[in-house]
Image 1: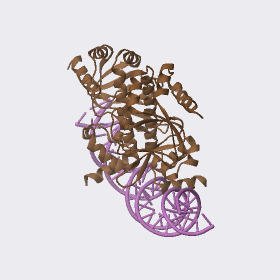
Image 2 (image 1 turned 90 degrees about the vertical axis):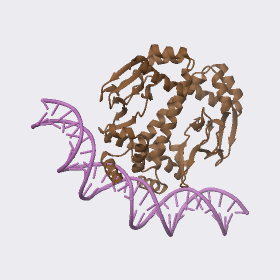
Image 3 (image 1 turned 60 degrees about the horizontal axis):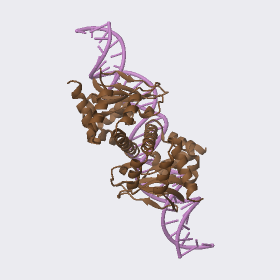
Image 4 (image 1 turned 120 degrees about the horizontal axis):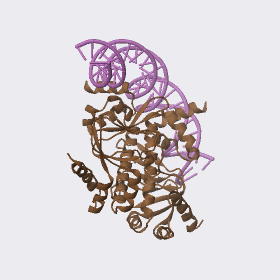
Length: 196
Length: 196
DNA sequence: TTTATTTCTTACCATTTGGTAAATAGATGG
DNA sequence: CCATCTATTTACCAAATGGTAAGAAATAAA
């Protein structure tokens, strides 16, 4: 896979959401870079302003917070190619309270946020694209909150397994547990109940 | 209060997020209408495509879903002047699964979504404004989900009381309960524990 | 390979929350 | 004002989940 192969995955993703002019494509091709990371690598740190906007081409990443109690809470795991960044500092450059970490080896396409700003101003279709991506994120988050409210821990886990079976193999149990709002012990018990 | 008074509240809100040209202001003034509703009125219905984008000038509203089990889940309550609509059909006109209902008498400023589309194309600052609003919604939702994961029912209620004391007087307990993912009975018990 | 470190599982008990049902309080409409 | 309906509170018990601690398993390091 060379640079163009990676970018084609990137462009395919964008195209599915909102068709893109050749001009905008070229803009992205100029501004974004391909970057590879080994597994268990911290890519962006909590307590700092996150510099990059990341698109995951391949691999699994997670976002997590370190609570005052010392407990880690995984807030998101990417499930397929797509953007995966912390939004706390998307337009306003605020200090993020989340870490971005690779769970497996991964390939990212990324650009500095200051460059993204330029892109959004220059590219004609890109602002509309961003709006659509934001909207999708809002819907996903809403569904996520609804599940936390109306499903039991076991139901949430079963839904997770059903939706993202490929993650079960590759993601440590404790990450999935905190993502679903369960203790690792409880999830281990739930997992056992399901097998029986 | 006449039409202009209401619109000034509307413009103030927008201005705080993103300064607005006079041209864009005039556009909004032409397209949006002021509408009043009595308490306990259904403003948009689940199962239909929501036609309007609503800005709450005054009053309290909620969004809620009716589950297959017959249980109502309140998914959001507005806490101050601001946009308050279902995003499921923001750009793509999809059937919504949420109802929008007034809890108290209220004043809305609203426009048809097809007109909003025109506005976003014509107004220079409005698309940027929408992006910022979306971003804020994403952050709020993320915090909301995090609270559901890391706080107990009692802690969630205490936080709610602290953040929105004015709502406690005016919003039925059962709405707050389902918003926080608790049964009304549990919330009643929690409330009692707090008083003691 | 062997050792060390981390992760997962299991068991135990405490606590929280849910579910059912009934009593009380409050609101609404005639 | 009364009658009716709805919302809230309370009590009881069952179920789900959390917390501590220890052991087993897997992974990483030497």
